[in-house]
Length: 214
Length: 346
Image (cartoon, rainbow over all chains, first blue to last red; front, side, top):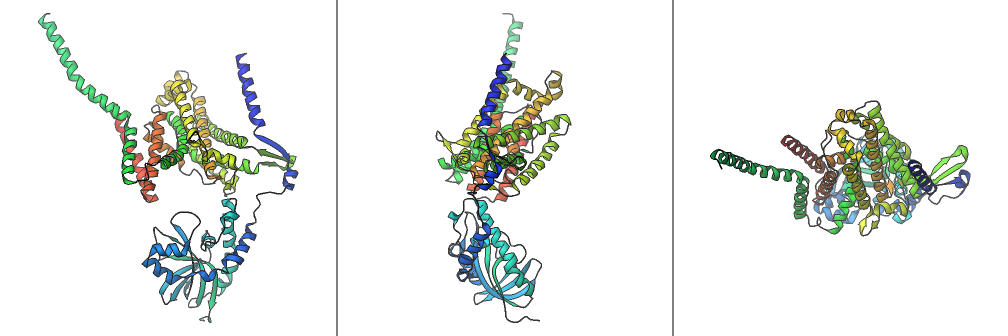
């Protein structure tokens, strides 16, 4: 008797929990109803590219000028030229430069950017275009457009895809050692552990200038 | 009184007085051993407090408590496992899987195209599903350990990989976010001026203390860890107790997963990475013997607080994350050495 009461109560609790845990619907009905959480990352990224990113490329800071400022006053350089969505030491800069291609590698093209401010070797990424540098470098992304971080990250993914498929291939096909190139892109720097010897540029615009050396 | 009797009495008194001093010293040493974790915590707080003015603030206090509540959930389960002379390396992965399952069911439900059926889950349903998953995986650990005599280290190491893989499959490698305000309340809400995760871990600790101190299950756990053969000969169903213990550890890891997922409003496929190590560290620092049969839940709680305060302090003092790992490693090593020395003394 005691056992049956115990099991009876347990069953009752299980039934109450189950009743309050799940609900059933027709799958076709659910599929037909418009999803409130749909986000078209490709469309958003395209619009961002055309209306914010590329029109704002003239705001990019010249790479040698930035390096000089970083060496002279790191805090000022980060405050005036870097952007990031989160807190932390990693921040992004939109940079531009012009220089000679010194090496064409499998994954990167090395360019020595030259200007009145000096010379700075940089590696332009042509294979591993990942991360949030391009999305965040201008500080123009509007967080209120997103209901989840997944959507925000998918914008980076789409921008990087666009670079891999549209920006890099024509450049990589014609880039040769000794050629001059004008570039605009995003770089990532750690303000606490600053390293200026291996700067990697995620390109947004790449233009070969002048005649090919061969 | 005859001189002989007098001399005998004097000898006895001398003997007593001569042994009294060492007895006092032993008692003092025993007290020191008993409260060593507490003393270590006090010293740690003092040093960090002196070096950082942000440490002794109410906001930081709640922050630390909220952070350690997940580790406490896992560590309590780990303590029960370690008391049976076992180990559970899968808790971090189980935490991730349960968090992902809860988030997935809550956000997307279950689709059964063959029956044209959609099963939606309420917050309660998703939480229960996550907890059931954790308990079932824990039970599976216990079953493989007892049925096939697989060493706990190996069985739970296998589960670590299985659960992580299942998490990746379930989430397809992406976080599942935006889970709603009701679910977020679990990890971010407050009740009577105390964060909800602290309430949850507090209730778990209380229940575990009662189980270990006042119930037959608790006595059996200590008996198995103390001497498994003797426990078996005295009629304890070792396999059943071990399966229960691993199930509890899995269930508590699931609760940890719910808290983490709720706090972040997102189930991350790589959540809980190396959480098992923090849990083992808390258990060891709390004085539980890795060979089983000796240790307390409150000791583990202290261990978890020490780990939490240490983590918090190192961040406040702007110590590099790489050095943080080194420091934590040395603290664990020191705890084990002290524990060994105490065991020898006993």
